Image (cartoon, rainbow, N blue to C red; front, side, top):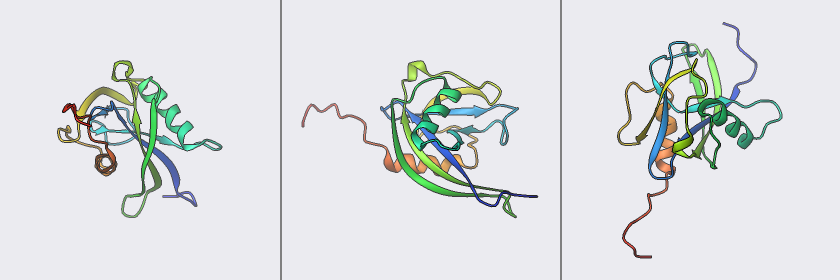
Length: 150
């Protein structure tokens, strides 16, 4: 199978509500791969785009909402297949969104959206989802405390 001379760059994003929940989308039957699995969002970096503008564009396209905060949380070298059939450099972001404004923006790619905690994830997950969620879990700020103490 012919392949490009260099890897592609993907902006992977884990949308969260700032209160400990992450947004996952179930891949529809017409999705490029792994239909029926739950996944975070992602999209290719386009020529001339900053990482942040690519993430903001993809969040609008996939979830029809705006990114409120974007934080870079890691980088992964993604080699898929044996022999390698696809090679991506995945820059991974945590993106806070308003849960009330999220909806499916690409119904041909996704057939469900749901909020989960990182301890109560659905199955099956997309083969690349777990690695991104591990980065998010390591980055994730602790939820606000209700103790009233400084």
